[in-house]
Structure formats: structure tokens, C-alpha cells
Length: 243
Image (cartoon, rainbow, N blue to C red; front, side):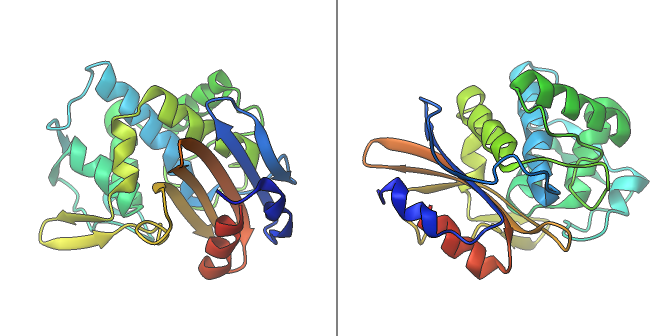
């Protein structure tokens, strides 16, 4: 694995590299500067979904009726229709792999009744995990002036996913997802061409730039890294490779 000193060349606005399970920070750059989380928001959406699955409140085969708000979600989606019934497991895969906004809203509404109530639960869980600088206002990560995070908090969340839900976290390593005759490719294009890469989540909005949290296992070591504010997807990926 590349020596941590090599990460000093990263050009991202924010970056952090953390060793797991020790929690030792190997590199950081402006890791506590507030930024818009973009679609990395969905990591918390999925954390709460995994929690519901583990506790038996929901199963992967649970049928979820898609509401009007979920069906109207803009941006990346699975083109789910209002009134359509979808298995909860497919919503999880759509959110994790295709970064589907409609699937994320459907998960939120099914678990908490409304997306607003779910966002409050997301923020409460963030505080419980030690993410002191993060506030969530929606389940998908589309722009909201009050929705904010930091690279350090996103690394904390990624580590918590692997600590608490190692089986469910395998979904982030899935390179392709098929649903209703359509095929959705994982937005993390480092999967399959960077040794040891196993996820975890990309994100982009104009306000945030190109973001990525990533988990890599190689040579008996496990590290999690976060890059926020990349100028393009290509430069973000290059910076993640450097980390």
C-alpha cells in the first residue's frame, strides 16, 4: 500500500485517510471544513436501512409502495412510479449501487412515514456515532442549505457501516444492478480497476463538487478514505488513488 506521505500531493478541498480498526488518521487535509455531502448522504440512509433489516423490522422481501414524493425525485433514479410496489432489498441496491434518489426517498418514507422524520432520525444517528458536524435534511443528498458534513464525519460513518453491518456493506462492492429490465452500473468506477477497492459511495452536486468515500483492503490492512470537492470525477478518482 502506498505510504501515507504520498497523500500530501492531493489537490482535493478536503481529504482524510483512516486506518481500520485502529481509527488512526494517516492523512488529513481540511477534514473539519463544512461541505455539502451530496449523494454520500445515502450512506446514512442505508445505515438506517441496514439497522432496520438487522432488527427484523423489515426484510429484503418486504413490499414497499412508492409514494408520489419518491416517484417525483429528480436526478439519478430508478424511474419508480407512484403506487408501484418494490422489494425493500431492491430499494437498498438501487440506493447503494445506482445512487437512486427515488429509492432513497422510498426507504425513508417506509421506515419513518415521511422523509422529514427520517432526516431527523439520520441526524440523531449521526450524533450517536460521533458525527458532531453533520446535519441531514433529506435522504438523497440533493442540495439543501442546511445539509452539511465534513470529510472526518463521512469517514466516521463509513467505518461505522463496516463495523456494524459487514454483511450488508457488501452491496457497495456490487458493480452492476438489474431491475425491471434495466441495468444500473455502480457510480464508483474505481471498483474493478483498483486493487482492494470494495466501495463505498460517490456524490456530486455543483455546490459540493465530486466526492467519494472509499474502502480498500489489501495486504492484510483495511483503510477508509474520503475525498470532497474534486473538480471532476476523473481528478477525484486520481486523488483517491493517491490517498
